[in-house]
Length: 302
Image 1 (spheres, rainbow, N blue to C red):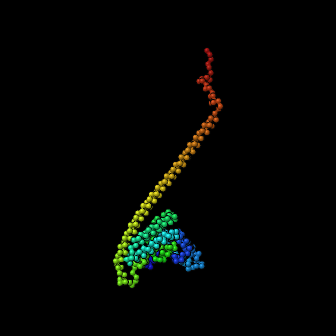
Image 2: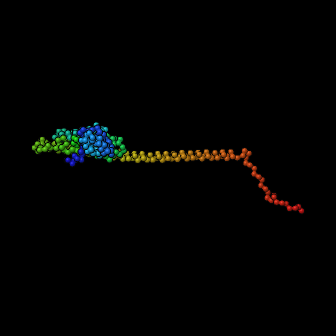
Image 3: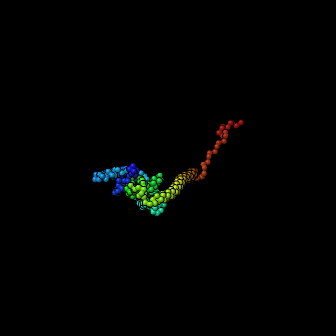
C-alpha cells in the first residue's frame, strides 16, 4: 500500500492551496519546472518551509494536468463524478447488508457522470490546442474512475487542481464498509449476510456487464467520430490544395492576358510609327535603269 501511495502522492499544497501554487499547476506542463523553481526562489528568503514544499512538487503528467484543468474550469463536472462515486459506495454497502437494489442505478449514474466529465475534458483540451488530449482520454477516464473511490487526500488535491499524479482507486477499505472490521469473526456477521452478499455480487456483475457494454458502445462511437474527423481533415486538405491550384491558374491567366494586351499595344504602336515615317506623296520614284549597250561608242558610218 505504501508503494501505491508513493506513486499517486497528492500535492503537498493540497491541504492549503496557495493561489501561486494553483497558478503553477495551471501552467503548461513544459513550463512547470522553471516556474516551480522561480516560485521557490521567491519564497526562500522569508518562507523557507514553504519554499521547500514547493521544491518537492513534481510536474504532473498530461492526464493529471487535464484533470486539474477540469477541476479549475468545470468544477461542477468533477463534483458530479465524486458525488456519484460516493453514492456507488453507499449502494454497495446497502447491497451487502441486503438493503435495497440501487447498485445498478448508482453504477449507471457514475458512468454518465464520467462521460459528461470526459466531454468537458475534450473541450478543454481542444481549446489548449489540436491533439492536446487525443491520446490521453483513456488515461483521463481511468483517473476519473479512480477518483470516484480514491482516498480523501487525493480527492482534495484533485478538487484544488494541484494533483501531481493520477489517483488510484480505493480498495475495499474505502468502499463504505464493504470490508470486514478487524477482529470481526464469522459469528459477528448479521443474519442473512451470506445471501445478501451473493445478491450484491450478482447485482455487481450485472452492473459491470452493463457498464462494459456501454463502454464498448461509447468507444465504438468515439472511433467512428475520430474516423469521420480524419476524413473531414483529409477533405479539407484536398480543398485547400485545389483552392491553391485555382489561385495559381488564375494568376497565370491574368499574366497571360496582360502579356497579350501588352503585345497588342506594342504592335499597334509599331504600325503607327511606320506610317508616320513614310512621305506624304507616297514612295519615292526610283531612277530609270539604263538599257543594255546604251553607253557603247558607235562605229563610223559607211
